[in-house]
Every structure is written in structure tokens, then in C-alpha cells.
Amino acid sequence: MEEEYPAYVLHARPYRETSLLIELLVLGLGRVGCVARGVRGARAAARRAVLQPLQPLQIRLTGRGELAQLQSAEAAGPAIRLNGDALLAAFYLNELFVRLLPRGESQDALFLCYARSLGELEQGLAIAPVIRAAEYALLSCGGSMPPVDVDVSNQPLHPEQCYMFDPERGAIPCETPGKGSLRGAALLALQSGAPLSVPDAQALRQLMRGLIEAQLGGRPLNSWGLLAGLKQHA
Image 1 (cartoon, rainbow, N blue to C red):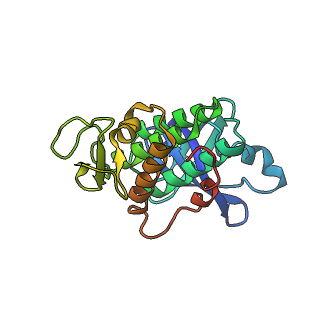
Image 2: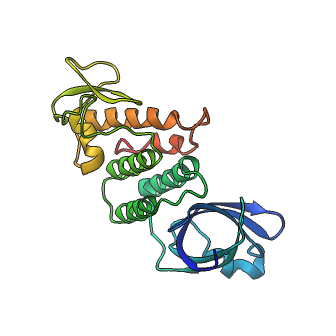
Image 3: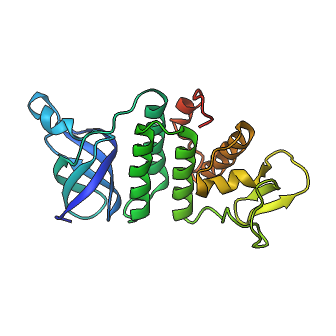
């Protein structure tokens, strides 16, 4: 693993006296745990400064096993500048990728989805569709998301039709709206990114929350509390 890779820091915490234990999202490698040595303390401020979330990186890694060694890290462009709700959304995405993407599973589509999501947040796009698209990508790549463009009978979804969504089987048509139901338009928006009404956006948020909870082994995401106050039903 000595070639250079594009990467982002998802999470970092102190490790021993002068090091950091870092979770990286790396193009070509997936999520990688690594140790960055000698990056804490006053003399290491410049080296540590680049190892921040939202900073595109070019990195070199060595070693195999559970933890790699970070040999070098350089900025690969300007840091993504976010504030307010968009910054909270990025924190959520970072935690989501750490929790749902196993280490060592190379999913280039997820790296590109993550980078695109940060770019869209920086551009000021609506937060909820950005988050839903990333959630959908993670669940789909992990094999935990049935199709959202056809129902259980393999018939195309109709935007105005009401559905119940089974985590194993997918969309089941229902005649009348009920608890946990949502319109086809909400499910189709996971792929299209189409804007949704407030009720549809809330129903889709509740569905995705439930699907993600089922993958977390009873340990909720800390950042869900941060998202609770967002104005855009994220």
C-alpha cells in the first residue's frame, strides 16, 4: 500500500503520546484505520493541520492488518468550507460512513458519493436530498437496501401510489395511507434526487432512519441528536 491514494479523514482521536488514530475513506481501499505518528504537540502543528475532516488528501500508507501506518498526507485541494446546518450534515455523513462501511471493503462508488455529497453541501444545495442519497448509497452497496424503483411484484413504482416498505422485500402497494407508509414519489427520489413535499420528506426520513438503525446493532448514531434541529427534515 505504498502508492498514493486520494482520501478524506472521517474521524481522528489521540493515540498514545504523539500520535493519532484515524479512520480514512480512501479511493481504491475503502475505509482504512491507520496510525499517524508524531503529529501531536507544538512542533507537529503543521503536520496535524492537514489531517482534518473535509480536507481532500493525497496519502501514502504502509503496513497490513487492522491498522496501517500513515507515511505521508498532503492537501489535494482546498478544504471544503461548511458552516451551520451543512457542517452538521457533514459530521453526520462522517459518522455514518464509519459505522456502516466495514474496514477494507473497497467501494469506489461510495468514495465518489461522499466527495460529491461534500461538494453539494458546500454549494448550498438542500441538505435532506444530499443526506438521503448518501444513506441510500451506503445501504445499497452493503446489500441492505431492496430496489426503490419497482415494487415486490417487479412493477414500476407510481409516484402517487401508497406503499409500505419491507426491509427484506421492498415496496408493497397499499390501498390507503397508514403508519409507516409513504408515496412512491418519496422512494423514487432516492435515485432521482427530486424535491419532495414536507410530508414525503418526513416519511422518507423515517424510513431511512429505521433501515439504518437495523444495521447499527443497537448503538445509535451520536449525530442524530445534531440533526434533530435541522430545518430541512434531514
